[in-house]
Length: 170
Image (cartoon, rainbow, N blue to C red):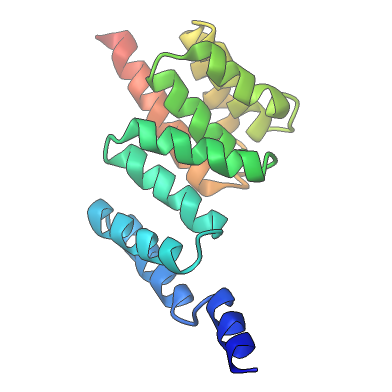
């Protein structure tokens, strides 16, 4: 009886997990990337299946320039939840940065027909992967004028647009 209670307790998420995640979110918001990674790793030690923490850790790895780790973790998240649209965009952006455009286009395929602005963002990344950065910029600019269902993605697209414009001006 005691061992059954103990095993049940070990499989339930710790009540400290929400507090750890909250601290990780605060660290991310304040650009304390190394602290965020440490906190997210603690969450995953307690709850290895926590997809939210896995996704956030992938993003933090990308922030720190650990692109292979970020890609590996994003692919693992998407293997478990293929409809996780924001993770799909993050992976596509990462693949574009790593100059693996064909792979990026493949990951974007399922969201190309999504309604605007998400579909516009997908089509923009798809165009950029095909070498049409000017067309990609136009799609992002158009999408940015619309209500944004995923503010984090809108912010990523603004940064990407700024980077592409700066590259074009250089």
